[in-house]
Amino acid sequence: MSDYVGTRVGVPLTAFAIGAAVGAGIALLYAPRSGQETRQLLARRSRDVKERLRGAADATRDAIHDQWQKQPTTS
Image (cartoon, rainbow, N blue to C red; front, top):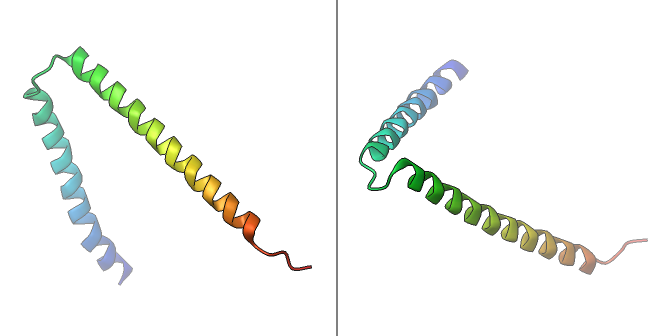
């Protein structure tokens, strides 16, 4: 039974991955920018995303820490 479930999930997942790769390749072929401009744009956007994720992680950590400090101690 587990083989059947794996097959049901694996085929669509593989098809999605192949479609995503083909779509990315076509997008690069028709990109309005040069390769260097595209790389710079991707680098800048990935830095922005990294900074936003870091900020969200810090805010989450601080919120968890605050909640942890509010918990009554049982001694």
